Length: 201
Ligand SMILES: Nc1ncnc2c1ncn2[C@@H]1O[C@H](COP(=O)(O)OS(=O)(=O)O)[C@@H](OP(=O)(O)O)[C@H]1O
Ligand SMILES: Nc1ncnc2c1ncn2[C@@H]1O[C@H](COP(=O)(O)OP(=O)(O)O)[C@@H](O)[C@H]1O
Image 1 (cartoon, helix red, strand yellow):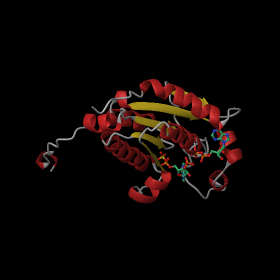
Image 2 (cartoon, protein in one colour):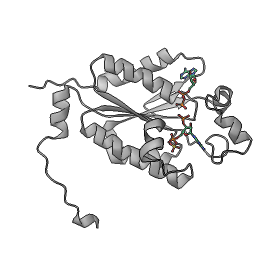
Image 3 (tube, protein in one colour):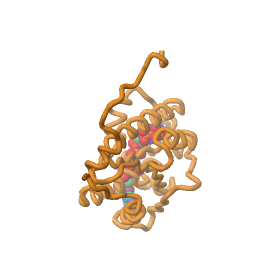
Image 4 (cartoon, protein in one colour):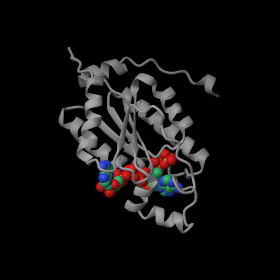
């Protein structure tokens, strides 16, 4: 089947699109427990980049698990497929010349390694939003931890399913005792030198 798929050679390349946008494009991946602060911090990072005229887009549960991945559960095999599809979508977004942010629990090391192999090392920035499960459970912004404790949710990361912490993230944010603003600034400081401003001439 796959051998019969022959890609068309399009004239406009990733480089062309980046040059039109006047900056390179890559993926900023946020991993951490539910309630750790991934979406909150990604949202502020995106605003800060957007204000600088950078083309951005954020992928998170709302636009992915309710849409394209609505067929997937939280069992390990489905999480693997969830992350694989998101990595492929991210790769298309990078191709389109967009600095892409993605906020997903992504608890398995193997699945995060797969993202790297899909988008390639140089295009991948890993942000570990490190908040203890005790703090996430205190926050319980969506009431999911309460449901997990009551046995109403299976495979809840941190409670009844594992979270494999990154060993060498590009940036680690310990959110307890750190403001959202400071966390976002730390990430933007890391990203800015990676952002190559290009001329479209
Ligand atoms: N069992 C279980 N474990 C973890 N999270 C759960 C679960 N059930 C539902 N939710 C909600 O779904 C969001 C996580 O989806 P993700 O696509 O990021 O998960 S994963 O990367 O495939 O592990 C997660 O969103 P965030 O809170 O934004 O992380 C939860 O709101
Ligand atoms: N330093 C911080 N960084 C991020 N979120 C924080 C921080 N301190 C408290 N919070 C709160 O924690 C919650 C994190 O929720 P959310 O961003 O939805 O997490 P996630 O996307 O990881 O599930 C929000 O209610 C947010 O206001």
